[in-house]
Amino acid sequence: MGKSVFRHQRQGKIVVLLAVLLPAIFGVLALIIDGSRMMSEAELIQHAADAAATAAAASLARGNSIAIARQRAVTVVQSDNGLSDAVVTVQIPPQSGLYAGKTGYVEVTIDRPIPMSFLPALNGQAQSSVGAKAVAGLADATAGAAVVVLDPNPPSLDLPGGLGVVLPVMPSHHLGGLEVLGVGNLKIDGAVHVNTEWGGMDEDSQPAGWALLEQSAVTCTPIVSLSKLRCRDLRVVGGVDNPTNYANFVTGEKCPVKANAKSVPDPLLSIPVPTTSADPVNVSATLRGGVTVVSIPLIPLPTILQPGVYDYIQVLSGKVIFQAGVYIIRGRHPVTRIPLQIIAGEVTGEGVMFYITNSSGYTPTSGAPDASDGSTTPSATVVGTDLISGVINVGLLGSRLTPITTPGSPYAGMLIFQRRSDRRILVISRDALISDGVFTGTVYAKWGDVVFAGMGTVNARFVVGSLRFANLIDCTIAPTMLLPPAQDVFLVQ
Image (cartoon, rainbow, N blue to C red; front, side, top):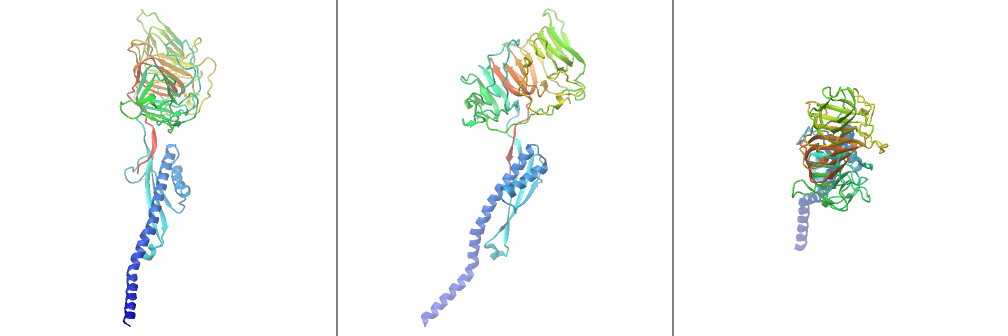
C-alpha cells in the first residue's frame, strides 16, 4: 500500500517536472534547429547580397545604366542564388553609411521570410525574417599610370632602316604588346597598364593569357634577359615572359606584376581631334604645304614655323622654332614617305602639339573624317611603304619640345596625337649620350606602334596601341602628371 502511494506520488512529480521543463525543452530545440537554420540562411543571404552588390557595381563599371545595374542585382539574388521569395532593395548610390552619395557604389539589402519549426510554439509566429546588406563599388587598384598599352592583339610591323636616328637592334616582329629591349634598365615612376592578351606567366610563375610560342603581353629581351623593368604596378590582361624580369620602382617592395587582369579603358578617348571650334586659340585652318628645313649651321637666323595644316614637316639641320599651337600633318614626304621628321639641328617647340593623320582630306574646321574613329578597331594592314608616321630625335643639343599649356584647352599636356585609327609606327629617339634636349608631354597613338629609344630621365606619358622601349643605357620615365589609375570592383561593406 505504501509503495503504491509513493509510486503514484513520484509519477505525479515527473509529470509536473515535465510540464515545467517542456517550454525550456522547446526553447532548446528552437535554438538548435530553428537557430541553426536562421544562421545558415543568414550566411546564404549575405553571400547573395555580396554577389549582387559586386555584380551591380561591375555592371556600372562597364558603362551600363543604373536601371540595368539594379536589375542585375535582383537577378543575382532571386535567380542565380535561388532566393525567389527574397525582397531585394538596391540603392545606387547608397543612401546611408560611409559611401552615401558616392558615384559608382551600390548598396543591396535583402530581406527573406524563413518558416520556423519550433519557435511558433513559443511566440506564436509561424515565420521569422533574415536580412543582409552589402556595398560594392569601383576603387583604385593601382597607382596613377605613366604607360597605357591598349591593343589586345598588336599586328606585326617590321621597322624599316634609314630613318636618320640610331636604334638598337630589334626583332622583326612583336614579342609583346609592351617590349623592353636593349641592354639598359627601364624605370617607370607610375603604373603600367597593358591590355594585350598574349600569354606568358603570372606573378606566381603560373600560365596566364593566350598560350603562344614566343610572345607575351609584356616581355624583357627574351632568351637572354639583359633588360629589366621597374615600375609601381604592372597590370597585364595576359602574362609576362618571366616574373623575375620585373621589380617594384621602390626597392624592397613586392613584385608589381598582376596578370590575368581586367583591361583598362582608353584614358584619352574623350579628347577631340583638333578643330578650330575645339580650340580656337591653338588650332589654325591655314594650309602651309610641305616644309623641309636644311639650314647652314653657321647662319644664326632660325626658321620659324606657324601652327596650321601641313603636308609634311622635315627638319634635317639648322635652327627651327615652332611657334606655340597645333601642327596638323595630313600628308607625307614625297621621298621618305614620312609625315614628320625631326632628326637634326636645334629645334624649339614650346607649347606645341603635333597631330599626325593618315587622312589626306582631314578638315580642321570639322575634324572629318577622324572625328568618327572612336574605339573601332582598325584594319591590321598598313599599306605599301607607308609604315612610319614620324621620327623625332629628342636628343638634339639645345632642343626643347613641350606640350600645349593653354588653360582650358582639351589638348593641355598633349605633345603628339596620332589619329586613333592610324596603326603606323612612331619612332622617338634620344641617340646622343650627352644631351640637354627636353622632351615632355603625352604621346597618344591609340592603335599605333610606338618605339621609344631613350636614355636618361624623361617627363612623358604614353597611351599607345603597342610600345617598344629600346634602351642603349638606363632610362627613367617620370611624368609630373599621371594618368588615372586602374580600377576594380571591390566589396567594401
